[in-house]
Image (cartoon, rainbow, N blue to C red; front, side):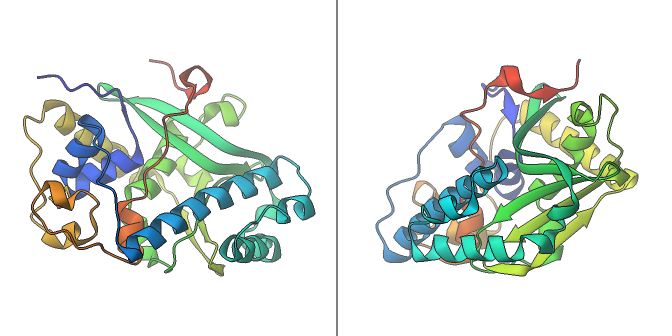
Amino acid sequence: MPIELNSLSQSSLQDYNDCPRRFELRYLQHLAYPAIETEPALENEKHQREGEYFHRLVQQYFIGIPEQQIAKTANTDTIENWWNNFITNKDVTGLKNLSGIRTEVTLSAPLGGFRLVAKYDLVATDGQKFYIYDWKTYRKRPKSEFLAIRLQTRVYRALLVQAGAFLNNGKPIAPEQIEMIYWFSDFPNDPARFPYHADQFKRDWDALTRFAEEINSASSYPKTEDSNRCLYCPYRSYCNRGVRAGDGLDVELETEVEELFDINFEQIGEIEF
Ligand code: SF4
């Protein structure tokens, strides 16, 4: 039976990779996860909202709103701390030498029978290389080895190769021209950087294509065999995998969903079929 889903994102692919059942519940059945009432989880939701707000402040900065004016709207201690970290350490990322800065860029390219879509926090160039920036408000700094294999790192770089030509005067961007940088608002001096190469791009695009084919032809969406993943999964009460609320980085990762609902598809940079 064909599935009713047009687009794939790093979030949905990560869910499919981690647990096909979670992919089914979140993206095919569109189930909101049950209300969370335990303290750590409420705290996590607050942290998540603060993270979204911080992203808005950074975006305002790059569209030219004066930093003092933005600082006045940092309305919690956590956001104020992140904002100060950003203003004090933003040069750590190398951003000050870059031009052609674009925030909230959305790219899309065909992938199997789907569109692969990604919304980038910021893309900038020095005329030679293109830098993808992603702001993270995690409470722990993930290991770079862990980030290297996350679908976000793989999708964002591969999609810039496939669909980023309009950022490069119509010329395709080569993998070697791309670097992705995660900047952590609580660890401002320790960004994670991921250059890219042609062989990595081939590996990634082949893997993404296989994912798309598998999702398209799937007749069932099994639960993960790794029950550790369930500890932090917001859907665990649907699966008889316990009701305990998780905490820490894992729950942040499991509930981090890319918001693609507000995308105007007419405005997406996309390669032609
Ligand atoms: S609780 Fe476990 S099996 Fe159920 S969706 Fe979450 S990760 Fe998958």
